[in-house]
Amino acid sequence: MIVNLKTYGIVDVLLKPGESFLGERGSMAFCDGDVLYEPFGASVIESVKRFLGGESIFPMVKFSNNGMAAATLKLRYDILGKTWHNLHHAKSDILVLNLLDLGGDFTVHPGCFFAATSGVSVGCFFDFSLGRSVFGFGRLIQQKLIGNGTVFLKKNRLISLDIKTLAVDQVITVDPAEIFGYSTSALKIKSGFSIKSFLVGEGFSSYTFKGPGTLYTYTQKPL
Image (tube, rainbow, N blue to C red; front, side, top):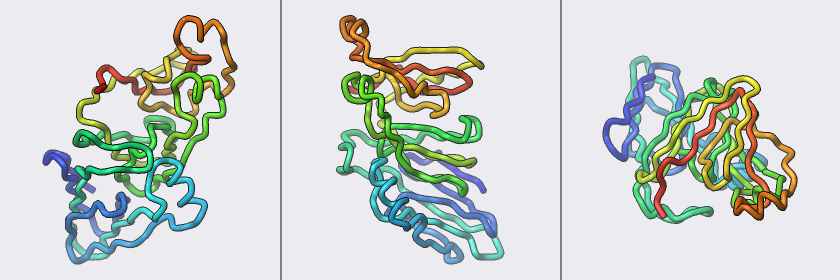
């Protein structure tokens, strides 16, 4: 499989015979005749998880090359408009992540998923630490990506990110408002209310991570 992101707003995918690719509903620009597209992840539970994670309640689309030669698939990601969680004021850009490099489990802002190779599922993550998710400027419900493939995420073009890779047992505390995504397994789940944290302007709790893990934090983002 060859994926080309050189043309802005377009993801060009060259599928070898038998290969498949997952895409957001309504994203196809065109495909060769040997490419079969069908709903993927149509169960009620999967649909609800996707919806809570910021995607459409309708299934994703699975594109498969059923021919004997390589086939071309073109997906358009520059789609403006309202979603359940946000309004895209600026054109999107694509962030490519290999889930195997992130421990096979990555949590990100709702509605970021665009496409993926096979072996990836899209769901939601509930952060029940209310001190950080509700009263600490974090998020109660986030999008969770699980699997061993590559994911293509949408983000605002004006956003730039910094990657922090944590060594084993390395601990770091981050303001929830500074986090774009993280390895779910690195997050310290228990994080109680802290009056001291509130008094210094950091909400009632912050995000604490323990390595190994990877964090994507903002270096620049629009107002």
